[in-house]
Length: 90
Image (cartoon, rainbow, N blue to C red; front, top):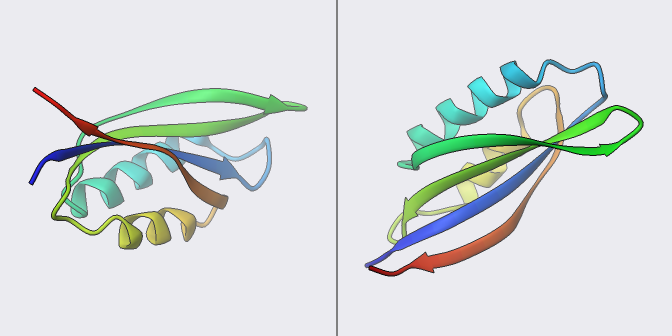
């Protein structure tokens, strides 16, 4: 099996949410699901709201759905969405 490169967008419930806490909890969930090389970016959305974009590698033999579901269940996150998934070559 190969490695999948994933991008997941996490939308906070409000602009006042602590993005560092969201990143911390998301990293725990991703690593518990066997995700590797986790990194984050913040993307401005509107009216002070910023989305947290998570990038990580996942072995294709691992299930993605449980990770995405748990990310969406983070208390201060209103939604999670896989925005990109591609196979790594090399």
